[in-house]
Length: 282
Image (cartoon, rainbow, N blue to C red):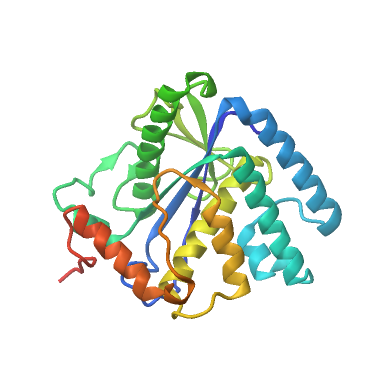
């Protein structure tokens, strides 16, 4: 069942070096997809039709877009064109519903950028020395901020507080953990860890997390030149998403690559009062 709620999944490229200091392999990224109460029924119906179709044609009970895009597991024998179609269909559904998305990444240089913040403390059962815990709590803060803003503009669309569902990992499926804040937005306030096979809303978060992470990887690793078909599928999917806290930048295709990506990030860091490039531990 899909309900008015917040659905969260993580992403990253552990152990894979991008070659860019802006995108370290040890970073931790979390993505939230917000399903406003007013569209929850439409999202549930759309996901039911989508998943029934995928199950009937491909025998897949759930959608993991890293596997779909890479052609692994159930998708190993499915053509590139058909897998691209699955990505396009999910992007079209999320675009049509304009589901709000919030993304949060954290890495070692995040702590170096903000030495005055108390990142080393324990908060309840959350260990803020663990980038995964730290990133999830930062996402909860960011998401709550954006939901409050949207609620103030359209109160009838948000029957708060919302349950917060997280794809299991930090804790096993079926377990819950109390959050330190945000009870006006997040029911409890509690993070509820669940299996995406049992909760289709988490598959929306899987898609958004995959697309954002993949775009960042493409930008940080590619050399300038023509856009390849596989890259175009992901870039088009990402361009249509309603991401609340990541600005969009127009880049000529032949200029799109690590150089232009790092230039944009450097300008952004300077505007925030930070060093142009991430700091490193001595």
